[in-house]
Amino acid sequence: MDKTKFKIVVDSSADTYEWDGIPFASAPLKIITDNKEYIDDSKMNVEEMVNELSVYSGKSSTACPSPIDWLKAFGKTQYIFCITITSGLSGSYNSALIAKNDYEENHPDCRVCVIDSLSTGPEMRLLIEKINEYVDSGFDFDEIVQKIGEYKQKTALIFMLESMRNLANNGRVSKIAAKTAGILGIRAVGIASQEGTLQLMDKSRGEKRALAAIIDIIKKSNFKKGKIRIGHCLNKAVAEKLRDLIFGEFGQQDIEIYPLGGLCSFYAEKGGLIIGYEKI
Ligand code: X90
Image (cartoon, rainbow, N blue to C red; front, side, top):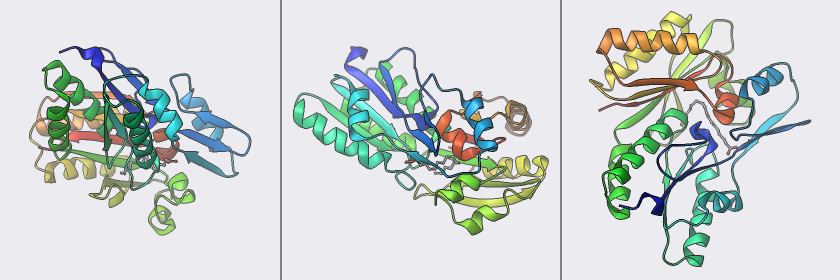
């Protein structure tokens, strides 16, 4: 199989700007304040943004890629797999669909599969890895479309947030849901719902209890063995604690830890963790 006929394209909520071994592109989301626009690409300094925003009290918002941004990321490739942040919280998926229709109309020999992750960050990372594997195994476009749809049923996402201020201010969770996270020491633990929205599961006082709540969710999802990807916002230490708890509870697993990109860091805020895993 000629791998150069394929391309994986994601929006920047996947925290992934480059990928080895297969043509790859990331379409940036933007974080906008009254005095600055941050573009979530490989050049962005996430730590600087998070620190600047922690002392900024004005309005801030985000914007998804436009269809033109998506078309730029598509380039000229025969088979494109395009993965977006959940359509339950962002216009990115709809924007990608417009780009797909335009692209296929102008390139009748090309095909674009747009995947609504109903999730974000580390769960999208798992989808990237899997599509790459399927291409390596020699499956054709239609087979991969079907297989990745099945795989997506087996992955899930958990989050742990110390603050939900930016989520609430931008209408991505209700103000009531956001209220307790943000009170000193309380962490909101939850999952991506079936509809691709935030579903709170637990409000824990203290890091230890919050990590225990995460382990509990993984256990209840019937996890035995699988890949786990942990993205953190300036909080590698807690990500490593979680990894060790997972090893203790379920034995050695394929776990990777990495810093969240700009978009996820904006919403997860300092200290936040987002975990993508193969639940079955
Ligand atoms: O279109 C846009 O401007 C982007 C809007 C994104 C809104 C929410 C992003 C949330 C990221 C929070 C924890 C993970 C929740 C996943 C639920 C599906 C991080």
